[in-house]
Image 1 (tube, helix red, strand yellow):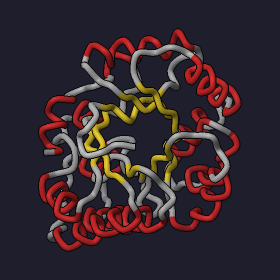
Image 2 (tube, one colour; image 1 turned 180 degrees about the vertical axis):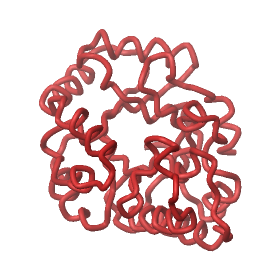
Image 3 (cartoon, helix red, strand yellow; image 1 turned 180 degrees about the horizontal axis):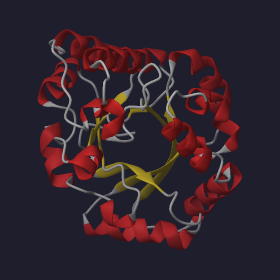
Image 4 (spheres, one colour; image 1 turned 30 degrees about the horizontal axis):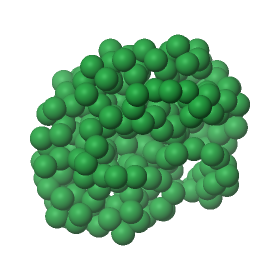
Length: 264
């Protein structure tokens, strides 16, 4: 894949709110074309497919009833066979931009071997890794879950997991790499050395990092990785990918111009 801003792209677009049809894909394509985007990445959260549930046992056993109930409602509600069939239909259709298909897989170090086993033979274009759980704390669902949490420990756990994700070499892209900031929390210590370690791990494994507008759209948090982390990525030569984390067609390319400026 070309990276580094050579192609105007949105590489994080979810299809889950509609049927797996060419007509549904067309609605995302039209929005992308309106934003002059040349390449899109269509993907789904892997927990939507029963084949990947062994990677998500920590949600089934989470201490918070809210998380357990959410996972029970959302998991295994889509067909992987239908998703892959749609990919094949898109490849034979005549869309006026490049369309790639992938998965967004939640990462936890204890599931690295399982992730490899379940994804190594899939005919997908890319695999995106994400961290939505910091050592059992599902931090990004609602601000209320942060009550009485040790913020410093949550940040340490989050970036330990992000670094392990990068070191695993399992993924093409690291999704929203500082999304733990989404509700405005900050640790009491400097993250600079952690950022350097994270960036170096991404560079060594050849994993790209998203510059994303998703949590900005959701909570008003700053766009993309915060500047010190983005600067570390640039110093280490990490490839950057622009992404909206869209779940509806109208969100495709959200703040794409601003994201491209951040990538420079």
